[in-house]
Length: 428
Image 1 (tube, rainbow, N blue to C red):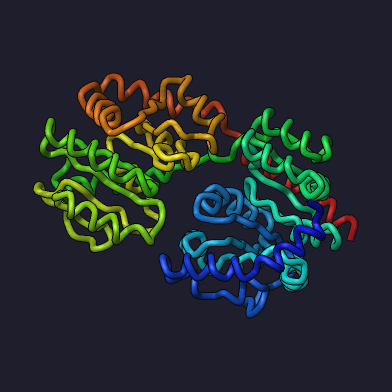
Image 2: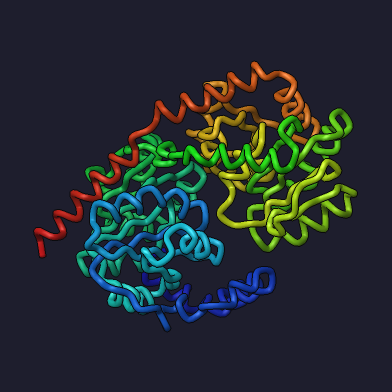
């Protein structure tokens, strides 16, 4: 399939796109808002001539935040426009940056929509986070001489096989990228094999290792545990959970409660549309549950805190003694394992970690990560870490060592972006 056929099929598929958007809006009403932006209509006022960063959703927005803050400091004269595709991503961008950046949804990958968007923004540099590749957006940038960077790029073997099936579309698209800053050499080789120009592919590492924790965060968490009278209660968190995982997690928590009746679980579903259903599930299971969004105090009789707020995940991790990272007991590929590790928490996950293979391997090899398959194993690991503080300490120190050993990717990425900005300025 080449780009012309892809574009034709995209146009024919617009009714299906509308149905999918309607289905998502039924589950999460925020999807029904700002639909015109998805076609580059009714865009907000945007100052042109700066840096455009695309972060598809929440995870990419969080990963991009240190890079964006550094770009704001180093290039204060350049406006920064951040795009995403999801309401939760939009909320996260606004929470992180407020009015310091320009923001809208990225229009669908239709040539006329991409052209209208770029004619409005006219960026000097485009930065796409991780793997969100859109052929028409990239081609429209190339036509205008706008350098495009794939930053913190990752490409699993499974994704590479998928792209390879459409080589006539993938190879020209990758060849139009100015720089691919890849996390690992294995991923770099996959990009080259798919058609990226070898001289444009560079291993810079993962900027997720460059996570910086606010020193006040653990102090605020300790203060809240004190308000909950939970300094001595065993507390664990199951974060970024997906459908099919929560029942397993609650079953594990029931086993833990049988051993330690004062055990407290912080349950954080990945998507806001699941907050209400998960609260009802906890109640049906007979578990006394407090919604974090209410601000209600946690009493000795409560056994679950539902993390139904946005932008608090690091703080909720800091409240716990042990962290389980979701999206991994179901074949979703996992979520960021480094956030709890950076807070000094022993990290647990399920076996499905194909989105974080390299990071998971490093943490596992260092002894900072333990994988579980079911509720029994999850309860055994959490209970064992509560009982064995020496082992918990070893896992904590191992995780912090892995982070320290891999830091520096952000500086390498920023240096490459600065070179491209200088080249663009000198050619104008």
